[in-house]
Length: 210
Figure 1 (tube, rainbow, N blue to C red):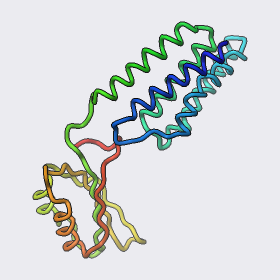
Figure 2: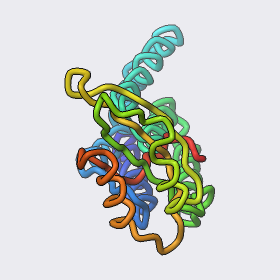
Figure 3: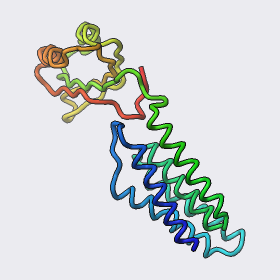
Figure 4: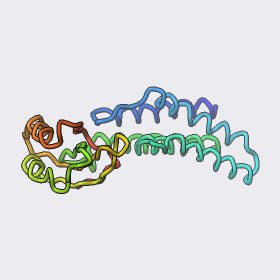
């Protein structure tokens, strides 16, 4: 009965994960969604097989060490859902069935509500601009006028060498101006960096805001 309840609650956790991912810039993983559905059942079995408090402590520590498989590189929403699923499994395995149901529906509804409401969402779009320049180019301030014209804010975050040290890659965080012509900006940069690679993309969630 505990396994059946854990499996049912696991599907609820999985459903909450899928619903909270709709309308966002990321999509959910099918295999990870199935894993979330099965994880509470597996955790509850581990706890049910443990009899003493000392052994239970070791088993719980071992189960929570599984989080590492999602921590690299991982997504914060995915990691929180792994903790969510394991918490439900622990409740079922330790015999707190009513608490498991309450936790599942309370946290599930809270997670869906927070993500779908757009809480803490960025009001401006930030992007990452990578410009490759030749090694003989003095890149200090070389693109300030172009970035100042096409962006609201920008900052140079990283400089690294590429292509066996023959090229430099400059990474900027930029906040684009409204209705800016991105092609015009990239064409202007291409004329200045010798037509080398330029990458303009969305920033990941772990990138700091300007």
